[in-house]
Amino acid sequence: MLMNSGDGEAKLYYGPSTFRVLRAGKFVRCAVSGEAIALEELRYWSAEHQEAYASCEIATQRLLGHL
Image (cartoon, rainbow, N blue to C red; front, side, top):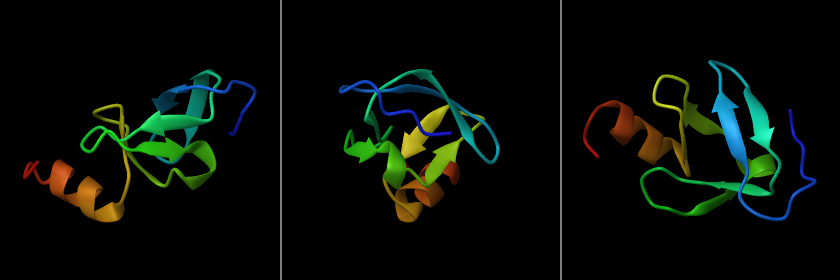
């Protein structure tokens, strides 16, 4: 579900296969790199840890406990 009515950072609830917008915005930050990720580009996150990742490599390393 994409809602881009805000200009700043969004707050999301991450589910296992989708996310829900809690506070409208255009982007979220990668939990590891701090990089801004546009909501329409967001592909990787952890429902368990409730955090977003900028790439599949970062997501994999984080979930394996290497970051």
